[in-house]
Length: 246
Image 1 (cartoon, helix red, strand yellow):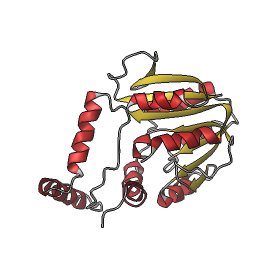
Image 2: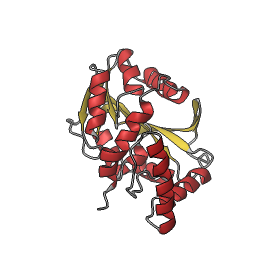
Image 3: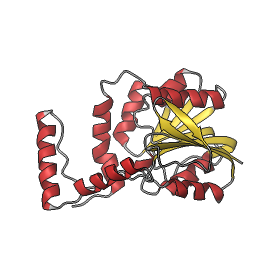
Image 4: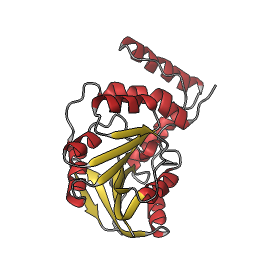
């Protein structure tokens, strides 16, 4: 029986996420830049919330070790269990990005990195992130840029591979054979589980919400580059947004 995107992320993809991070020890240049940006913009001891926190590593873990009070939600219980095991100082719980179970104006900063493309209704999630952010607080997130040719091409390939055609099934069989040889679980579900976003949708969202200031960065590892609103964003596969709530 086909499963939807949220179920796939919760029950299938989350296992691959844990496995991919099991032996990782380096924070990485881009993640370090994200942490540095938050440290530059948000005072220590502020309340932060990571949406789609995963296991908490590396960003939430880094920030709580540098004086922030960090909470977080993820749709996958196994990721939250792992987060609690490796870092008891993070207040992590199971939750849906599109329906955050926090009171309004709870956090000084709300962020979502490496994950917006896994959220089926991203604009609903951004509404929730703004709601739980305090007035004059910050909302940060990155997107995969659908206006970028390389990203659009990768997405078309993903859609093709996730289509249960005869060729798609053949590719999935080869892929699963390799997974089994590596001791990993096979994945027989055909689900389009990540989707890039057109930047104009984010700009339209900004224009109709209570945003005091909005900054956009083009991401080229290791340092995001701040862009003018009128700049051509198509050269960047990933864009980072920093919103200041009214």
